[in-house]
Structures are given as C-alpha cells and as structure tokens.
Length: 206
Image (cartoon, rainbow, N blue to C red; front, side, top):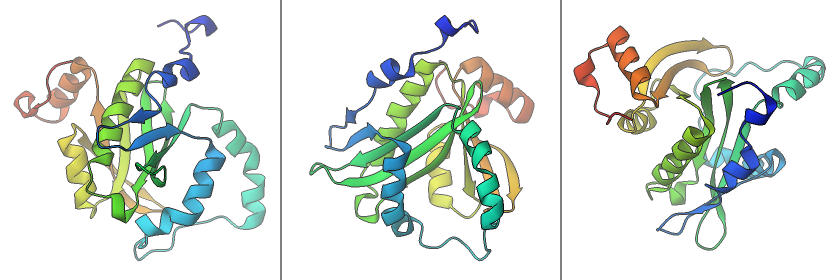
C-alpha cells in the first residue's frame, strides 16, 4: 500500500459494504456519529458498568480540561468508529467505539450491551463483522484493554483469538490487561515464536 492520497482507503464506501448489518437473530449494527453515541451513553453507560472499582479515576480540573480541547480536536482526526446495536424493535441495546492506535492497529476502546440483551450472541456477531471490516481496511492488529478481574470478557476475547500482550498501570482506570489479535498468519507466528510456542496456535492460517 502506497502513502499517496489516491491509495488511502475510502472509509465511507468501505464501511457501507459491512454496515448497517443485521444478524440472523434480528440484531442490527449501525454506524453512528460521536454525538449520537454520547447521547446514548449518557443514559445507558451506568446500566452496563455500574461498578467502576474501588479507586477514583483521575480527572483533570475544569480549567485544564478546557485547555485540552485543541488536543482532543487533533485526536478526533484519526480514524474512529462508533456503532450502536439495535434489537428487532429498533431499540438501541448496545454500543462500540474504537479508533486507530497506530497505522496498522485498531484499538477496541469500549463495548457494552445492556443487561437484557446480554448472552444473546450479539457481541460475537458484531465482533466477527468488525473483524471483516477492519481487515478490509488493511489493519493487521486489533487491541483492547480490560480489568484483570474481568474474567468473562477476557475468556471471551481469548476464545476469539486474542493473546495477552501486557499490562498497563493507568491513573484513570487502574491496572489493565492488554490483549492483541494478530490477523495475518506471519504476524501471529512471529508473536508465538517470541513469546510462546507455535503449537499453542489454534487459529487457522490466514
């Protein structure tokens, strides 16, 4: 892939090939704006994440937060994706937001499904469609971070081909386990040669 403007992926056209997407069970995943996502999260984030742990996340004071706005505008210029998940009746029941971590890595920042729609297979359906979309764009690595005690999501991600890539100690969220899913087979093989054994690889070669 060259670095010329003509060679850059047309994300609007490419996204339309994968989303909106309706699963056989009737859930629909739609791309939305950041403002739409924020409005939904204002009302529903606490329903999915009611317990933030025992520590208080660091927040800058209002004056410093205001000074950060220009930096946030720069950050918004990188590739971002925002989705809402809808049930058969058209009611939003979940979300995902993420962005480019670097040129070849997409960071799955946050995903949530409302309690009444959990354990429905919705997350797996969305994840598989997202992987197809990100692969088509040209990403080769997908990352996410989770609390070390969140066994349910860690097990789910490990079953989906993620591997443990480290731990970060953050002032906002405390200790977070970093996971990575390497899409091309040669990247996966390099990871397993460096940090494990090739016979631990359970994914089919891409």
